[in-house]
Image (cartoon, rainbow, N blue to C red; front, side, top):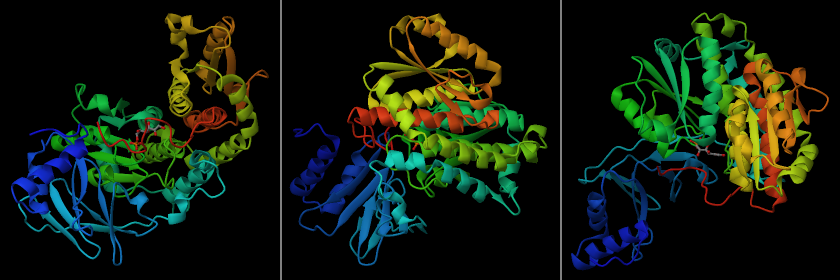
Amino acid sequence: MLFRSETDTEVIVQLVDYFVVNQNMTTKNAFLKVLDLISVDSSYAFVLVDRTTPDVLYVAKYKSPLLIGLGDGFNLVASDAIAMVKRTNNFMEIQDREMVIVTPTDVQVTDFAGNIQKPVTFKLDIDPTASDLGAYPFFMLKEMDEQPAVMHKIAQTYFVQDGELILDAKFLETMKQADKIYLVGAGTSYHAGLVGAKMFEQLTGIQAEAYIASEFAYDQPIMVKKPFFIFLTQSGETADSREVLVNVKKQGWPSLTITNVAKSTLSREADFTMLLHAGPEIAVASTKAYTAQIAVQAVLAKGLGEYLNNANAQNFDLRQQLGLVAVGMQTIIDSKEQISELANKYLVNSKNAFYIGRGTDWTVALEAALKLKEISYVQAEGFASGELKHGTIALIEDNTPVIGIITQQRTAALTRSNLHEVLARGASVITIALSSLAVPEDTFVLPDVDALLTPLLSVVPAQLLAYYTSLGKGLDVDKPRNLAKSVTVQ
Ligand code: F6R
């Protein structure tokens, strides 16, 4: 057969056409035949239309997300519910290896052998206006501004009954058995897991470690006897994370998904779900989902720690701390002008930048660098500040921007000494320091909060720096090149 295209979706249409024209098949049978021919190792989400019957959609998916929206006199197909909430809040799941025929008034689900399947439908309560831009120029700015409200929302949602933290007992009992917590995520969600791991260890005494999903899926370490998996995913649809979850389920290991999207694939497939309650996140660069993931992990770590009678958890007033975080975030957000000036002075015309810190501050440096590179295309690196002198300091030259994050008492002096080293080599140094550790020369001072929660504040100036750098370069902040909001391929 002659290939007329190198684009996979176009090849599929050609193949359907081939069976219809040359083997006299109906469109439905030709579609089924093609689905059968496609290797099960691939992933796909198809909506096929035959131009002679434009009211009929032939739909199938394998591993990739796809959902039917059910309306009155119309039906919709999209990869997630957010895309459809302005039209309906009724949805129908599609399972792998099913074929669905959708018309304006009917949805018929069969397996590949033609047996009728009973579909699962669900309702979602999403405020359709939550995904409107309003008076904002970009969703990213709106979403950063929403962070204090998200902190309040998380506190209100999880601290019920006179401010007591209530979590599902069955879930806590399952987690209690674990001898290690594995936190799995990609990109920003992985960075949130790095912060979470420290909170779980301090508040529960259970060993915890964060892993990059795409690495864990193909390079699994030696496992403990009783692992517990936490999947961190804003969208709930990330293919790399799902690959790990599929194997976790095969092994019979218990799992929780922490996600922003109820009924998303990873939420449906894990044993338990905790929601971020951050509202839809539209900008490709994740901001409020990162801080919400940290806050929800703190909720869980405290809840589990209390269940285990851990003194650190018992003495940690998380509800009050989340209130302080919200106020602190607002103070930073109100200093946008200053951050915009810093971005224009140091970053807009720079080719590269370094974020440095130690421990928790290093994990925020990783996230800060990711934010800057993905929306401003400035080559940025997040670095453990003590490692600089082991090689990377060779890159520092006149005016190289180095941003130091200083929020931990134990390492503050050490990071400051690393900043002196780069200053002596001509770097332009910016500091983001916690008030109780600040010196008069610091560029940006963060209000004090508990040492475990400082990432919730130190990341905000870094998010704003990335935003204003992108804006200063005249780029499309919300839709950076080469990136998609949900990464549904491995
Ligand atoms: C960066 C960003 C990505 C996502 C990553 C995982 O700003 O948004 O790095 O964090 O693609 O996505 P989720 O959290 O949907 O699994």
